[in-house]
Each structure stands twice: as structure tokens, then as C-alpha cells.
Image 1 (cartoon, helix red, strand yellow):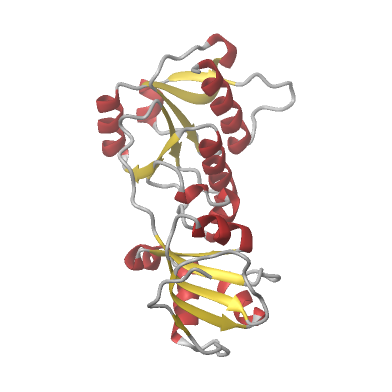
Image 2: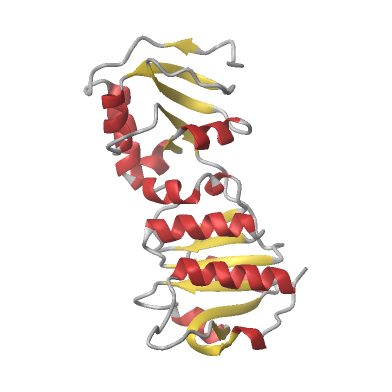
Length: 257
């Protein structure tokens, strides 16, 4: 399996009361605990296989009959049952492998050419989809305080590994203001009342801000950004933030290549 020599194959874990099981469940459920431990719970064959090519795992749990067909490196390896994996992952039909992985380091994105700003995006599925799209279209990411956690289990599943490969960081409005000034960004804000996107040809570097579908963007962003919109046919008033973000990111990438 291509493991480090220091790996220890642990005995079969069968009890929900085992400290490691409790630890992994708490990682999934508790944001503060994740940041305290600086680790994240992930699950699924495809995701773990992709991350194993670049990252070292703290713990891997494998269903006792499953044999991974890829190499990986981990501090500890454990065998267990699907029932335990169901408890750990919170999924009714979990795949036969889960892992605890160290949080990636946040990046300095002031030199970015295309920066996606996410402002109070609270739906984990939307956040994960936006991160996956940002990676696909070569955007860096800044998450403002108030967004759902990057490492929420639903956000991780929707991102399909993008969380670990993106250049991204997070902070408050003061951090964002400093970043935008240092990077010399032209700022654009998605707004249903803005100019049609076809009329805008931003120059590099650009920052695109997407906000909460119910509450919109922060006043600071709205004050400093040019408002842009995707024309839609009535009676539709607006698009889902993840769909709108994908359109904006693709079009602005194409216009800047």
C-alpha cells in the first residue's frame, strides 16, 4: 500500500464508545473542534484516492472486507464495520473508507489574477460547488466571516476535493479591504439590478463577489464594487448562487485568456 514504516495496523474497531470513533464524529459535527484539532474528516473512495496522491493522513478507517487499490500514507490504519463508518460519516450508505486529514494551510492570495469573494454563503452544497468551480476555472478564493465552514461534511462532499487544492484564505472585512488594496483588484459584485454581464470586460486582476441569496452582499462590497447581473427571463428573478457563480467565473476567465 506504500505506507510509512511507522504505520501501525490497529485491531478491529467495533465499539461506538471507542475514543477514536467519538473523536471522528465530533470532527464531523463540531466546527470549533475541527479548528482546535486542525484536522478534518473525509470519506469516499474517489476523494481519498485523489488526496492520497498529495497528502498524508492522520487516520484511515477501512471496512474489514475492503482492499484499497491505491497507495496511501497514514499514521494509523484501522479496520472497522460499515455500521461504524455510518456513525462516523453520518451517511446511511457509506463507502468502505474514511480518513482524518490535516487541514491545508491558508494561502496569500493578494497576487491572484482572479479572486472569488464569498460573502455569507451559508448553504454547504452551494459553497462546495463554488469551490469546485473555482478550481476548475482557475480562481483563488477568499471566504468572509459568516460563510458556512469550508470543512462542513456536506461542503466537503460537494467540493469533491477542491477544498484541498485551491489557493484560498478566509477573514473579516478588514482583512478583505487590505487584500483588495494590496492586490489592486477591480471589484465586481453579482447583483440582480446590476449591468448585464456582456457589457463588462474587466481587466486583470479582478475580484468577483458573490453573496447570500437572501441578504445579498455586505455594504462595504456594494459600495466599492461594480454591479453586474446575468439576464434571466421572467418570472425568474435570480439564479442560484452556485449556478450564477459558475457562469460568471467561466465568462470572466474566458475574457481574460
